[in-house]
Amino acid sequence: MIKERYQNLQKKLKIEFKNFELLDLAFVHKSYLNEHKSSKNGHNERLEFLGDAVLELVVTEYLYKKYPDQEEGVLTNWRAALVKGKHLAEISTELDLGLYLYLSRGEERSGGRKKNYILANVLEALIGAIYLDKGYKKTQKFIEEIIIARLEDILAEGTHIDAKSKFQEIAQEKLGITPAYHFVKEEGPDHDKIFTMALYLENQKISEGSGTSKQKAEQEAANNGLKIKKWT
Image (tube, rainbow, N blue to C red; front, side):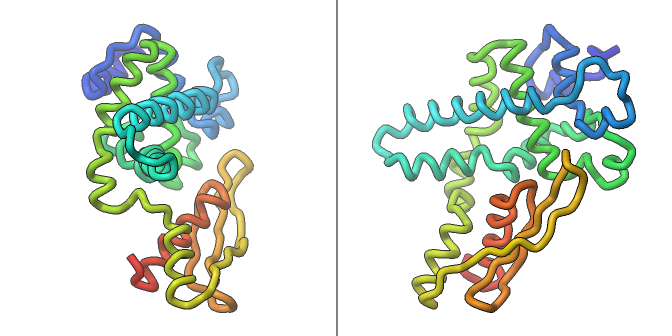
């Protein structure tokens, strides 16, 4: 039954799993357990934790070996662009990972299958499951083919540039002002918090941004600020 559920996905991934319970676990969102307390295997956050670490290692190793002449700061920015939530969510959407998610009814109604942070997290959980089931080399190949292969496009589009750093640099150059970020609000249950931060230039509010952490919300606010000020 579980094996049949993932036949099409395995074809897309070009990976055949041995442990289908492990693969299934990668798609169990924490909210699902609120309504299915008898579920034995738990949720996917431990796999996400593992997958995040494996992803960062593979990307770091690749960049270190591929670009021996680049400085650490440049490689750090490139790595951040490859592993950031928005990029992972786009890949997750292309793989249709949202279709396989186990969600609570409330999360389903609120559009959980299309939320970027849930999609990014499930891709990391999937990477964790691939690593446990197939080992490092197979996981490395998967990451290089579906994530790292997009590096040239990222560099061409300039999306590797940190929005907060870019906004601060331009604000100081053009206006002589260092931007500030202020907390606006937080919403949602403990397992699913969304934070909103506002970007200010002195006393003038420029933009707001939201994310699953204050740091991510600040990045979103900076990105929105760049568009509003037409500094992109």
